[in-house]
Image 1 (tube, rainbow over the protein chains, first blue to last red):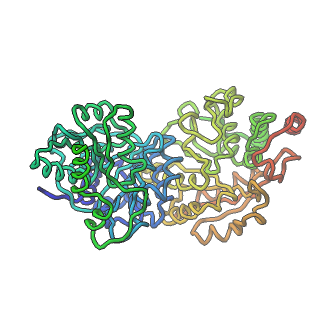
Image 2 (cartoon, each protein chain N blue to C red; image 1 turned 180 degrees about the vertical axis):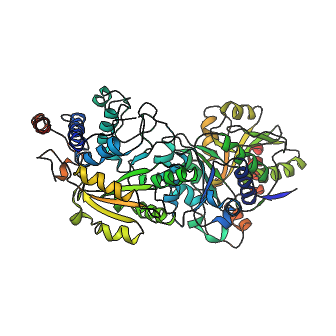
Image 3 (tube, rainbow over the protein chains, first blue to last red; image 1 turned 30 degrees about the vertical axis):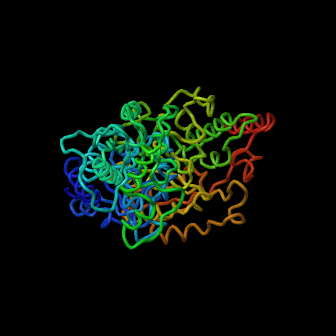
Amino acid sequence: MKLQNQRQVYGETLLELGRENKNIVVLEADLGKSTMTSLFEQEFPERFFEMGIGEANMTSFAAGLSLTGKIAFTNSFAVFAAGRAFDQIRQGISIPKLNVKIIGSSAGLSDFGDGATHQSVEDIAIMRAIPNMTVLVPADGIETRKMVRKIVEYNGPVYLRINRHDLPDLFPENQEYVIGKSYLIRDGRDIVVFANGIMVSKAVEAAEKLEEGGISVRVVNVSSLKPVNEDEIIKFTSGVKGIVTAEEHSLIGGLASVITYILRGNGIPVMPVGIEDQFGQSAHSYSELLEEYGLTADNISNSVKDFLLK
Amino acid sequence: MSKMNMTVAELEKLARTLRLNVIKMVGVGQKGHLGGSCSLSEIVTVLYFNRMKHDPENPEWEERDRFLLSKGHAALIQYAALAESGYFPKEELDKVKQLGAMLQGHPDMTTTPGVEGNTGSLGQGLSMACGMAAGLRLDRKKSKVYCIIGDGEIAEGQIWEAAMAAAFYKLDNLIVFLDKNNLQATGPISERYNTNPVVEKWKAFGWHVSELDGHNIREIIDTLDQVERISGKPKIIIAHTVKGKGISFAENVAAFHNGELTKEQFDFACAELNKNN
């Protein structure tokens, strides 16, 4: 399966969009070589704003640019893009629904070496709680490209979460991306796994192994955390004995919260896979960290089997 | 276009009218940001009625100058100026802060014609003004951005992030007034949390700095004439003002930062402002 890096795809897509639309401006907080906004900077220096290590000012400055008709992209690691600049996003951007796109890079545990200060376990919860905000988590490079193009067509604030590592392609190239829609990645009968981000590929891996043992698993990519088409989610649960949610985020306020809220009262048991209420930590590799926090295909498989053994 | 070509005497009278409308909006028995609104009356009057290119009939006019009240709690003086300019009927002033009203406690561009951005979380408006200035320059617009910050507000670290950005990007279409009324909500700035000295700080951050009496219309006009000719750097005008200006019992009294008026105080303030007009 082809691997792509979401950061690279993001940087390339932003550059393409910059060529197509002169109203696109990009703001960066000294991480451009990591977030890959450096590609845009090289070609469009006059529309690129290096804001130094000052995410608060970057975010309000972006609000000001959008007030003159620009489509402003702010960039930093997710933990700073959503956390450091929370108040700037809330007050100056979300209340008036300005056309600012907040890109949270190196999200989740993906900045494995830097530890808890640089790993975002709560960015989605923070952003989801803000009225008027759209919150998106692409599963792979293809979806990243489609999403980045789509959010330029949408006039309003968006938070988009980008992973640091190479991820396998899952999203069909010929499938149109629509904000708010969830995507069936793999059909199955017994259990549905609702996943997003890197956990979609983990869920597919789990489903393939389980199939060998005669267990049929449906995998749904819930890449739009807000808005989310609730009827679609309900339909995806038809006929299943249990529901697993899987996310690289705290179990508070992310995908588990979205799904359990939508399915409240419907009686199908839900098993959430995600980060318990705790911070990340440093590790020598991403996989080691994912293992430590239970964000693995094996953990999804075990959750599925638990339902079927009951 | 709004009334330009007003004489200094006419502008002085208008500034007192705006102040009177602030008092009316504060009313009796309700909290209102009286002090910091009254300290700005002359500056706001000059901006809306002498200086800025704007069109109340067409608030989105692309060539307009922009005004952003970073110290958004002084919204009442902006509302008075917007109503006087004709952005909305003056009756709206009577409904300020009522449930569902056009005029919110802090400026809201989604409800109020003429408001350019949502300010009031202190420290953010200057960054927004910088972004506007940068955006207008990208579009080769001649429009200027006027922004008012407070001397209490500059305790916010983001102000200094914006100060660096404006100087780095040489935003010479940005003109900032620092409303130096020397009081924050809980008392004198020099005693509570000293943001002084301001002139040296802004100079060190790479800005062109002027000082003036923020209640002297002539001086405000002359200083704007001077600084608007300076290119290559952002400009700040340190306006020495009196919090609660024009209402004798509220002048330099921190309690009227966001205070209530009794019926007696309200009548006294109205009479005082009417007498001088």
